[in-house]
Length: 268
Image 1 (cartoon, rainbow, N blue to C red):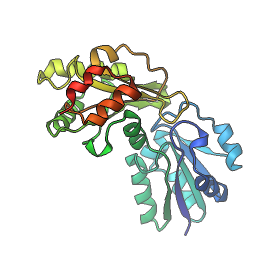
Image 2 (spheres, rainbow, N blue to C red):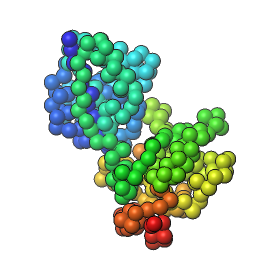
Image 3 (cartoon, one colour):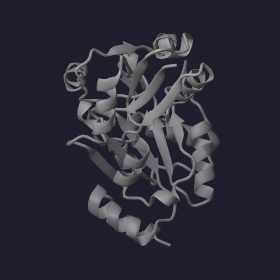
């Protein structure tokens, strides 16, 4: 039987792929990629193809979700296939489903990891990684409906004095991405709905844009001010810290993310 190798591309451009990932792609009989699960702001398919010396077939969301990745599986039955994905390969559940299908067909699968927004955002936030609770996605409103899930996840994490990593909705094939500013407005609208003092204008938040690039932006401030901050282009990530900070977290937020000195009052 053949082989399917999932290869992470990292966060920002084609230079994020590991040396091992490049070598695996070079050895493959067929190379596929998808770019709908995340935005890589400075990525060039042409430059990537020059690096690996092969043409890359880009698949759509429909190819992978509606057609269950058949284009990949058909070629992986007897050949070696490389599947290139943004970030770390198995963060998206779509890719896990594809791997399960491959294994059930007798196709050997392997994973070549890449940089993940999870570890990158936690590190760039300057907050201690073991103090993060459940993560959540803030989706685009649909026909005026705003999902209440992010509010309840943040509430649950805060009740345990934990930080919340918020992924912001991406519709790459439509060229749309939810910004930090829009996501903060969504959270404030949910506070207006539930009124439990979880997300207030004076609450602290940390915004991160273009993690992995040379022009990454990291800014910590109170929501009432952060909501108007210009984070530039995508992708964007938002973190809602716990109500209490470790003294090193407060110092780091001030020194490395431009947080106001007043955050020292959150140290308990």
